[in-house]
Image (tube, rainbow, N blue to C red; front, side, top):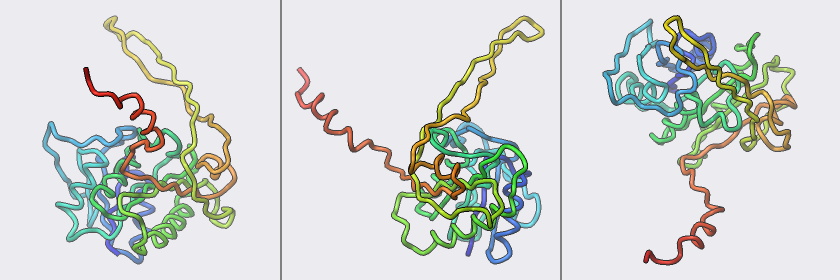
Length: 250
């Protein structure tokens, strides 16, 4: 299988390196990732400056672009052909709930879906002590399960793996996005020249404990697999909108 592997943590992240080595044992793997960390850049695509690709080693490349750029460059420039699968990760930290809207990791998989290539984002749910080897084994299992030609067009998978030894995991759970509870705080500070600057602080470790969500599954020791789609139309609210706008303009 020809696999394009990328991330938003950067080309030197242990997550992508360990997963790459694991997948390369039985697949043709190319790593293309940002030259530095690009966490929370969302689905940015670079249009205002040139993009450069630097070969780090055999089939390992770094670029000054975003995670979505990495997918576009990999598919159209670097790889010898269209990849069979695109994997974004392993991200150091979870990508669940509303975080998927900020995540560069998820955006790279979404870009793969734009190109009609089976894709997934994969994250390990921890802040330290990452069990990347165990998570890599799980990620490979998910790849093989999804690469059977049955994925609906315009969808991709968001996978979150508890930071547990593989034999301690409870199994797989197909989930929906949960709801994270943010407590963001804007910190105002003064630089040495007397000018103001700001840090966005706080954390989002709290969430709604609701059965069937990605948060709930990971809390219970299951690998969460959330199918996401490109069409973000809220179909359930269309009737309400139609009632509001059913009259012609005056």
